[in-house]
Image (cartoon, rainbow, N blue to C red; front, side):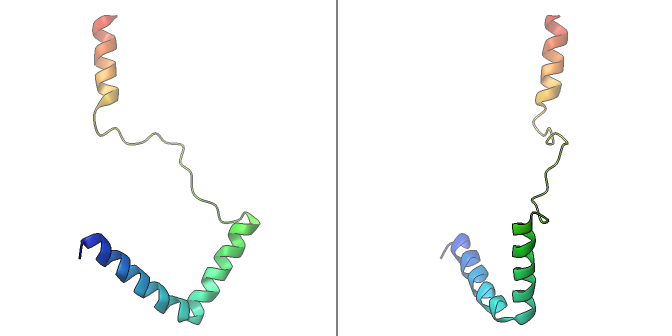
Length: 67
């Protein structure tokens, strides 16, 4: 069995156990209601993504050499 299959299996097992818990069900219902009301929204960020490849540095170097 692959790691992906084992993770899926573990998540599904924990999910069914959590659904039986009353506190978790209340929290899930509260979050669902907050989403429907527009209160809970996915966070968006205005900062640019991390430049791990060095693309900006490369572009700065190329533009300085050609200009």
